Image 1 (cartoon, helix red, strand yellow):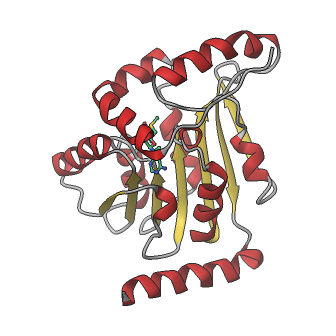
Image 2 (cartoon, rainbow, N blue to C red):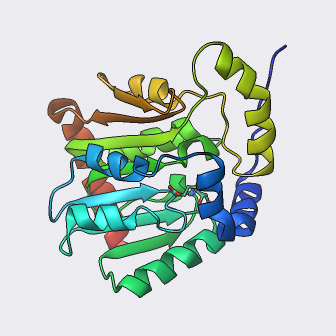
Length: 236
Ligand SMILES: C[S@@+](CC[C@H](N)C(=O)[O-])C[C@H]1O[C@@H](n2cnc3c(N)ncnc32)[C@H](O)[C@@H]1O
């Protein structure tokens, strides 16, 4: 039997997340998300004090404490999300902690460009929810500076018979909840852009953090592109 995933348009994704924003911590538990996955993902970014980082599909801002610890008060955190309901919670979190260096934007991330080249880009449980993931990935990659890192943390089906057994349930659950397509392989899509991709799996290979560093030479022109885009935006 062949299983398929039907992509949703951006309004459906945004509306779905507006409705489930209240229940995000519950979903973490339902899907057995290991407690330290987010911290591990941020560690892989290799951020330093004063760095700039983009959190793609930042949701309720649950990664902000780790990102903020990494870049410090002088760093910049850009959070983008398509769901107003999720972003409302992210804004509340920012206000509660008095974080002044987090800029939040509500839009489809493919339409967003940061005002500066980035030291890190994070997809935390968000990559599979984006039907245009390949376009988003390339757009994000272009905004990284040479030496910058891109990290994708997400769930995946374990290999072999257990993955095949879980697939129908996973499709059923995702269609009704987070809209994350379990059939795509983000680490392979990242490997189409750059090698090597560092892949670390845990919990019987059902979660992973993959990471790639933008090479200095190849990235130089992209960095210039990012600066040119930033200058154009500033001029508008
Ligand atoms: C499963 S949640 C993950 C939230 C958060 N990153 C976390 O680790 O808990 C996926 C998020 O991606 C956002 N998202 C999906 N498609 C998007 C898009 N095209 N542009 C921006 N955000 C998007 C959703 O609104 C949602 O908040």
